Length: 409
Ligand code: ADP
Ligand code: ASP
Ligand code: MG
Image 1 (spheres, rainbow, N blue to C red):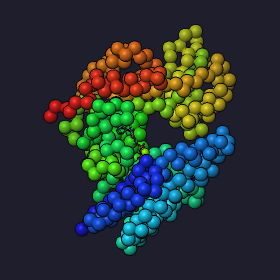
Image 2: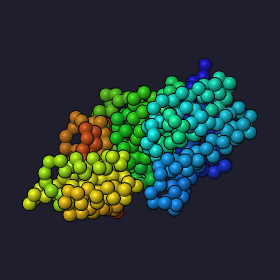
Image 3: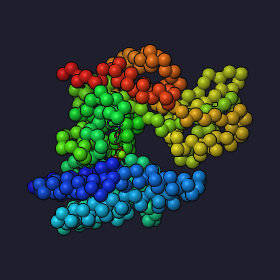
Image 4: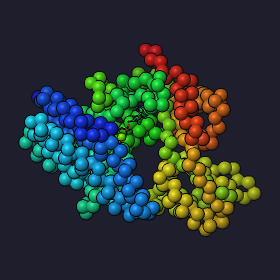
């Protein structure tokens, strides 16, 4: 008896008709082994970026509902093309949009969360012996409005369908052949990891390793979905994202990540009294703006500066909100800086090893890189630095923690 397999192919894997045909051949190979196949695809190449640019060209402050109406179109092209490529090879196949497979989300447009999946039409199509092709990244609200799941959201569609269908595995096919100790396009010495724990992968994804969307990893962990990250263009096995086991703890640092998609905002000379932080961050939360690192300086003469980082795309909206808050509380004003990057080291072994943060700081200092902000979690240390040093910092840290070498058994 074959398995039920969910495969997800990212934008670069379906960038042109030839690539779509070669994905179809790969899917057909799995189907020929007797597996039941559900295939999730992204928009072709950089289509979603182009759609975002179209939106920006029309208005700087679009209604998020209408943004989703535009963004969701990219994936619909790919599903139709892949289904017909499979049919042309004599393989029965059928495409569905997110709404058609009952991918029900909340109403937070452009970053909706999945509420439940009915998947009735998927079951029916599988029972009819078809290969099912589903549009990634999209869903709909209870009342039928189209939503999208945040950038990189096709990974989430894949994992969520794998959970809902109780699939044997969710295979994420992409342009690299697995999860590496650092972005292999930045660090040529980076090493492919055979296995990585859900927690480490979640932290790496949240801290900038875009090979998997962070929310998809959260979902995979919650429903114990085995995720296999592998190459669309090569047959080799990739990286298994899985439950933590004891051997993983021996490795102190598993990976280095960097995130160049953030901005820093500071609100200057804020009165140093109770309730101010709640006013500042309450105003941002109401606008669904998620802030990341927060630093409040030591108060002097009754006032203090508060700085925080946030996704660069939210910077303008946040600045508007903050300018109003600054006026209300009598702060001096707001300063913004887009030229920052966050570099992080991640590893479950950090829980039981000391001196890791100190080594990060000394490595950056040896390169003369100034640290603007620091944050730590149980299994990660992050530093905000000037953007132009991002790649240098990642390489230096990769070197300092000797991640290019196979860890001792
Ligand atoms: P897709 O279009 O298939 O979803 P993405 O571009 O979203 O692909 O993710 C793949 C990219 O993630 C790779 O090309 C690579 O540059 C980047 N990446 C960042 N960090 C890592 C890492 N630690 N391991 C592998 N790839 C990484
Ligand atoms: N097409 C969407 C994006 O570019 C979703 C995805 O590719 O995962 O963000
Ligand atoms: Mg992606």
